[in-house]
Image (cartoon, rainbow, N blue to C red; front, top):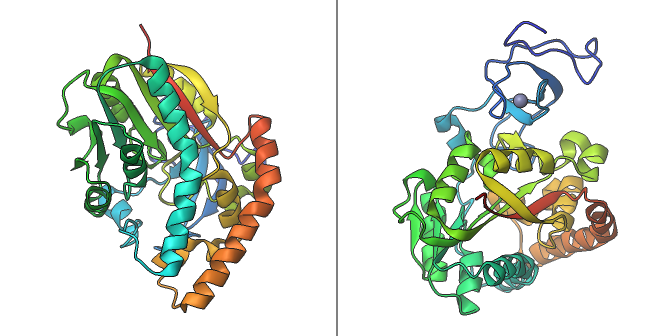
Amino acid sequence: MGKPGVLVGNLGKADATPSVEVRGICPACSSAEASLLFSATDRLYATTDKIFQIVECRQCRLIRLHPQPRPGELRDYYPPAYWFVPGTTVADRLEQWFRRLVLRDHLRFVERALNESEAPGMVLDVGCGDGLFLEMLAERGRPNIAGLDFSLDAATAAWTRAGVPVVCGTLSRAPFAPGSCAAVTMFHVLQHLYQPAGYLDAARQLLAPEGRLIVQVPNVACWQFLLLGEHWNGIDVPRHLIDFRLADLEALLDNCGFEVLRRKHFSQRDNPAGMASSLAPRLDPMARRLLHAAETTGARLWKDAIFLALAAASLPFTWLEAACRAGSTVMVEARKKS
Ligand SMILES: [Zn+2]
């Protein structure tokens, strides 16, 4: 046992990287011992040049950001206009058409869960972002849907776009009755939270007895992370506080009273585009928008086309890693344990 609170070793190469003191404890097992995997900064959106460490718990192997930014500091790492209502230019309309096309995958996964569970109640999308998922769900005739996001910009954009109730706040204080939800969805939410168990406990309270929890997170046990390391965009320093493997997610869900019914290792929205962003972060459409790249419409369309081609070229690899259960994201359907 090493000294509590001290980071020990470096993937078995302790001589290569000096030990650094870890002030936090593992959110999964409370161990204070961790190994340094690598150091990195905000590669995608350049909100800071501060260097963070990615460390792995010595006890349960959960990978996390260290040090954890304070809440006020973390807010600065979400650039202004992170969430927005799309414009009406040709490039905007093409981007929206593409985003809708690839999001159908998520809709099918959730609709199957709703159909099979037959639970009554609301569908609540936690971390609803700009509300595209809510809008598409409403268009497909699903009644009784709502969103929640801790960003006021996101909640406003989602409400404007989808025309459904959207709450700005945290799930643990959401104004919904216990047992009122047929499904709670959390796409790319848990890795942004200091205490993901708090959100899962709140979701468990809100779900009807046969209700379904749908969770999607980046999966650090993917081939892309093995190959690209700190350049894999699923790490997303410093916005991702925890980097889950599927096994970590399943252990967390189990501890919070859920059993996993279904797992999906390929996301047509996330896996190929994520690989393209990892390989060419300056071509990522969201990064270009947030970095205020001065682009003519023609230049924007060309860069979008090159990014799309890169994502298409990533398809065979991302399909293969997902087929081997090592996809760069994982989506699960879970229900409350009886
Ligand atoms: Zn741990």
